[in-house]
Length: 428
Ligand code: SF4
Image 1 (cartoon, rainbow, N blue to C red):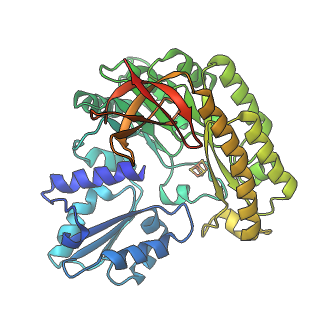
Image 2: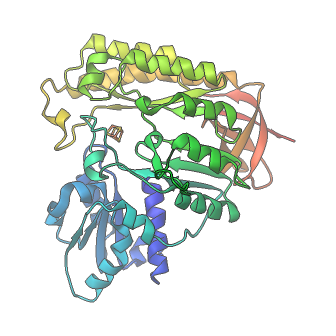
Image 3: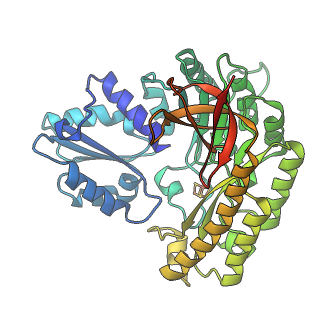
């Protein structure tokens, strides 16, 4: 989502006649767009400001979740002029003008105003073959470890008409893959594009939005992220089975495999309920594969409770996963909980979990050998003539080619598999 926001900020500034500098030492305005999900975000921000500020710098703006969480405290760094939130970056051009004109030296603008932001953003520029489209922002779940509800605000779903128009515009300019994004994307409930006479205003859920977007000309691959297990409906599972452009892959963060910890995290489901959804999903869409997020060392987590997480991971057999040590975030309920776990214990548990997750990842990679996969190529590899792309399951596929493959879909016969990627040859 920060990558998406950063692009929209750059488009907004260019629309206001600012010019993008490609070397920070030449830039007069430095904009830092921050994430507060992990520890030491403020220190990292301040040290990056120290690295990049130079004699050409006239304005320093800090946006995103660190600005939102720190509020006016951010100005303890005396060189910061503007602090703007994730929902107010459409007003950044006027704030920069004010600082440049000497009207104000410090500006704090961190309101939550998602609807206004999306209305004010200009058309997207520099369109790529693969693009994110925000459909939903904010979160009402208040997991006890998470800062998002405080930094991104309450849940807001963009109207379906605006999303469809944005997707159509991207497709008409060459985008082939779209990822619909939101903090809690599968709780999407946006206003329908039309009103049926005599009926109350309709809202669409994610499943309906996907079915409509899938019909648009030019779309080759559709993804969405990040979802919450409790918002996974049977209908959404059916969409994966019915809609060919939607990948047979779902990121469903579980965080823990133990009910007491899930309850302490305020996740709103048990481990069994999660496993039941996974089983149902596999029934409805046999090609489906999963990825997940995990947190180890949540306050008061015992060895047995941690072992439940490893067991759950082994039972599901994720294709890829993202696992982290619990990290204390200021002003969240978990930060004040008793039984904070020592870092060495978290380190040890993380290593055990990651080993189990890696085993499954290798197993999924090995299973591809001999198969032909459709791959969208994204970047060059480390070696000459090497190109790296992703299959539908987000597995990295590496090939050698004398022609530039970036932005193209190709069928690749997989020949060998490693821990983090597979290698193969392009076939016609
Ligand atoms: S659902 Fe996700 S974004 Fe919302 S509070 Fe929980 S972890 Fe944070």
